[in-house]
Amino acid sequence: MSTDTLEKSTAEMVKMNGMQAINAALVEAMEADPKVIVLGEDVADREGGGVIGVTRGLSTKFGDMRVRSTPIAEQAIIGAAIGAAMAGYKPVAEIMLMNFTTVAMDMIVNHAAKLRFMSGGQSQVPMVIRTLTGAGNQTAGQHADFYEAWFCHTAGIKVVIPWTPADFKGLYLSAIQDPDPVMIIESGKTLFVPMETPANQGPIPIGKAQVVTEGSDLTIVSYGQMMFSVMQAVEELGKAGVSVEVINLRTISPWDKETVLASAEKTGRLLVVHEAGRNFGPGAEIAATVQETLFGKLKAPVGRLGAPYCSVPFAKKLEDAFLVQPPEIVAEAKRLAAMG
Image (tube, helix red, strand yellow):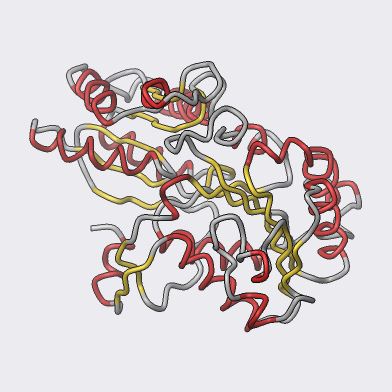
């Protein structure tokens, strides 16, 4: 039984979804520290509290000075957040959709991520960038891409992708208190699925993965909304007699090498599943590290499942084919389990 499971067994539980968990984390952080501010397109209540209502109620509770709706100008949003962070505030800046981070890449990559390094540690940029993405809702190629690998490749910024409402609450609390920039990628349907959550969920350490289920035949590592597909696949694999250890990575950079390596060494087999493109995706880094470290101890080559090398399709049948589906996970897991 994992530590998370032990904690849940003794905690008072409530049912909430990811949106409610983010809102609860922001309320808690803003009540505790007047320096925590929120800015982004349509985040104030008069515009509906964000594109899907995550920040609803915040401007009414904390005022327009702390919850600022901005023009449609992603570079300005991040630039203002960087300035506020350097002046002692803790801004939570929303980029409505992850594809729109492309407009603010200079501010994110050349400024937010590098100012501590380029100032010799004299300047800190304690800011959170929150953004939404994910296929499955027919929002097509300019609204649904997973670009986490871009930011994982950028030194100075942490990258977090929660799965459960508990992840959202705990990781947001930690990200807001982090002295460096943290990008939180809100993954598709993770925001809408209600799940049992500790009522008093506290901070979850950034960089620490969660062992969701323990197993002996194969380790599967995933994150974000792909975890739903993984858990469906694991149920089918259990019926087939394949014992799977599932790791919810939570933080993509820095990723929890110790937990993944320990699990892969125990089971002898590893499969990485993510929604991002398989080519040059985070799974490649994980696979390479595990192969290098555990060479000779693995019973099978590390498996990887990810999206094909193309834009996210709009047509529903093509979008379904684009996403990694539970039957693919089952088939690849069985192939790996039969080796060695």
